[in-house]
Image (cartoon, rainbow, N blue to C red; front, side, top):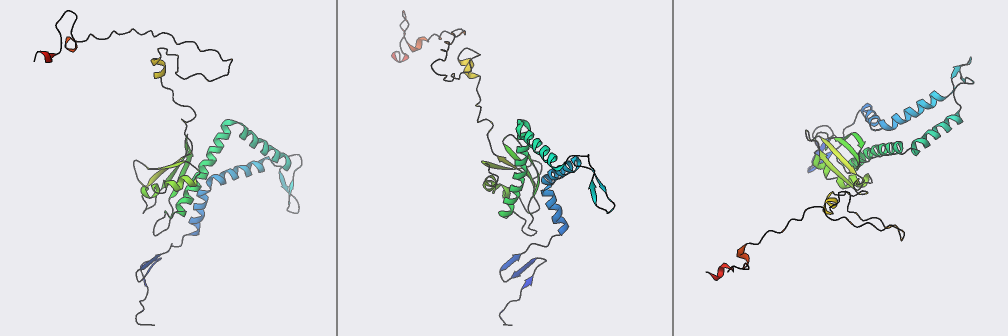
Amino acid sequence: MPRNAAPARTFGAGKSRVDSFEIISAPPRNPVIRVLALLLRLRAELLVAAVLITAWVALGPDHVTGTDGVAIEVTGTGLDTTTRAALFAAVALLLAAVPWTRRFLFHRAQAVLSRHRVRQVLVERRVLNSRSRACPLTVWARPNRVGEVVWLFLRAGLAPKTIEEEAEELASACFAREARVTAWSSTTNVVRVEIIRRDPLAPNLIRSDLFRWAAGNPSDDGWPAPDAGQDAPIPAPRPEQTRPVIPPAPRPAIDGPAPDARGGDWSEYV
């Protein structure tokens, strides 16, 4: 071994230092913890799959065990495979046809998608703990009037400012127009990520009551009628104002001479 070669020194588990370089490796994780974390992230998809499988089995025919130990369908019970598939398709079309259920399911699906996309952005951008390499927990996601809201629980070693620096990447990953990051008022380890997709005030502009009162008619909204062509009725003229007209205040004598007075500017007497 050469005399000038420096031996490697180890500082703790998963951390080594050679000369001026420091290497931090992720510690091994318990497989049970990793499986539980995966089930927690996929809870919405697993719930939907469990409901569909339960409904499929419940609507199917009954089974009995034969003499050879093989399950045999009981004739005349339940629905066959074709009927169940047609029933599931009809229910799906009905949920998609009704506006209320369509919006509810679509917005819930977008919230689940945003929760996965937010976590993927944090992993890709290395917003992790420096030692344990753990990503912030995506606790909950729900839709609102402008998009979705995703709640994050920050682990030790992360700050809300770190998440706020990734606002543009979060908006781009969630196919949104903007992303806003706000820390909870009572504690800073809980962060609220608001995904802005739409503006609820854009389709219908706010009309002020000042238009009606300025015209002297409370029933006038101040907006011109749409152009309906040559056969459109001629709008009636606006009624005369019913407010009393206040006469102007008399001008003082200092501003000008009165008819039978000397008057004039004060500069004439100085």
